[in-house]
Image (tube, rainbow, N blue to C red):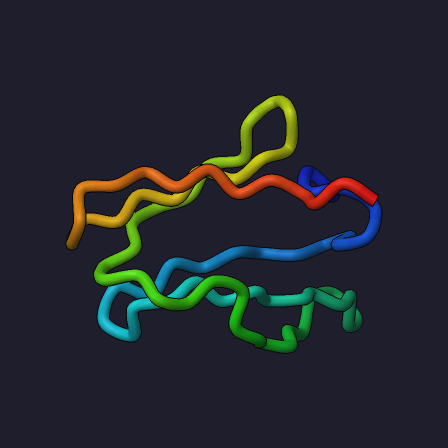
Length: 77
């Protein structure tokens, strides 16, 4: 829905507990549904949990394996 900014458009972020990574799924409208293109977005985690997008468009990712919450922000350009 564009919560991550215009550059990402319709993108879903999916935490994969067993694979120890967060995947980016770029969604494209296809008829009455969507198709997705999957690519790694964040790796090196032990067991990522659900994600949340904050009001400032940063992404919080919990890592159950380490007890750490990571705040991901867009790099300044």
